[in-house]
Amino acid sequence: MVTRRQLLRMGGTAALGISGAVALAACGETQVVTKEVPVDRVVVKEVEVEKIVTQQVEKVVTQEVEKVVEREVPVEKVVEVEKVVEVPVEKVVEKVVTKEVQKVVEKVVQVEKMAERPRAVLRFAHDHSSGLRGKQMQWALDRFAQVRPDIAVKFEPQNHMFQDSFGIQLAGGTQAECALLDGGFFHQWVDKGGFVQINSYLDKHQDWNPRNYGMWPDQHTINFANKHPIPWNDGITGPSFGLPFQAGMNGVLYNYTLFEAAGIEQPSAGNWGILTDFLDAARALTDPENDQYGFRSSSSMWGFWAGWGRALADGNEELLYYDENASRMTIFDDGAHRAHDFVVNAIWDEGISNKLEDSKFLSGEFSDPFSAGKMGVANFGSAGNYVVRIAGRFDWGINVQPEGPRGEAPIHTSQQPHLVTNAAESNGVMEQAVDMLVFFAGPEVQERAAIDRGFVPVNLEVHAGPAMQVAPPQGHNHITRILTGRNDHQHWQSAHPSWWEWFDGWRKGSDRSFIGEVTPEEGREALLAASNNILENQHDAWVDYKNWAGTLTS
Image (tube, rainbow, N blue to C red; front, side, top):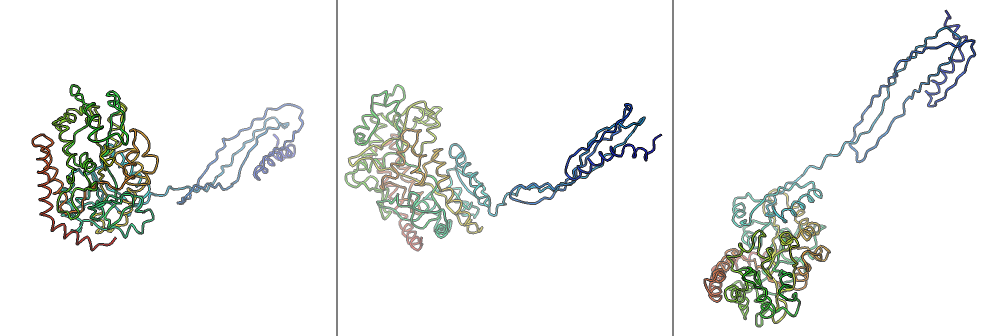
């Protein structure tokens, strides 16, 4: 048997080659040194090698950082090279034992930063909970949550009967901090402390510029704007208790497919007189056998005949619904009653407009008679639902208003604001409430409204942008042209503490003429009697309210 000393004497060079390779590898290099020893005969060498096991232990250091940083600490690197060199022995059994190496890696791991917890909760009462408006509202809420994660908004759906339900909440102190309401409701409650003035908060807000908005007086402001001109394009003025959000107007829709079939040219300025060209077209468009009518009837004052009456008046085209002192109704003065006669007689004498009771039958599955293709002309407040319902079944668009002797008829515009209630002040969230209202009135949300077309935007930057200029429908930019091109718009004259009572009075007073029970003249007499009675009985309350409002500053 050969002893280890003999082996070392005979194969020392080979042993050096193996250990030297290991030493070099330990220094970060890989080098193999081999020395062969000549022998007289070939001997098979068996080398028993154990499985190399490398244990890797990670040491994790957790930090909250803004970006990921990974760093690996250099550690000992072991490279083992096995080369069998024959030596002149009978049998050599060499046991190579692998060294277990503990690899320590220091790793910096990013922990995603937790979302900022809301520091304020706002209840938001609203009726934009379905359809196009619901879709647009969900988009706006999601976007606001991204922009202001510190404000949690609790959306509370409400119906159109808010003048009852929200009034009960105000009386009981259970109301939301912000709500979509209207001017009539606002003036009923503001002097009782239901709403909070926000001018001082707006003055400090970097995103607020009152000149970026159309002016709908007395909707969320107090102006007592009961005479012309209405400075619609000059921006918002007066004590403000909220901000504008959604608008509507009495635009006119035209079914161009029916116009073409009847051989009628599309309306244009200078050839669309209410009592001439427009009347002739309505007659030509009417086809009773196919339940088709020249224009869709409406008992709504703002929809047709109030603006048309101002166009047909003998000398005072600046008529509003009631006079400057809120003492009597003036909308039929100076010959303006002709438009009311025209619309009622179109139903019962001419037969060129449908009976109100037939509206549901004519609508069929399309929700309204115009979308069903049964009307040549109809009024509208916004275009989005028509886009969805018509869906390209016929050519249609928005165009000029019918004209009186002085040109295109003035329009009625309306606007529903977001108002800030006294709950925002009680709960210490006034700044957050104003921030939310500025965002919803701002260009991002209002441009989304222009795209979805669930309502008319209130932001003048959006009206000047591309979203309002494109179809469908054809002529969508007429909305912007009409709104921003003149300052003689009608509005609801909401600065009255009994506005809703007045509104219901004249509306109910006029319905009988539209259903054929009385003549147009008798209908007007009933309307005027109901309206003037309310204005007279509530005049002292109006004076007291105006005196109270005079103490406010803006």
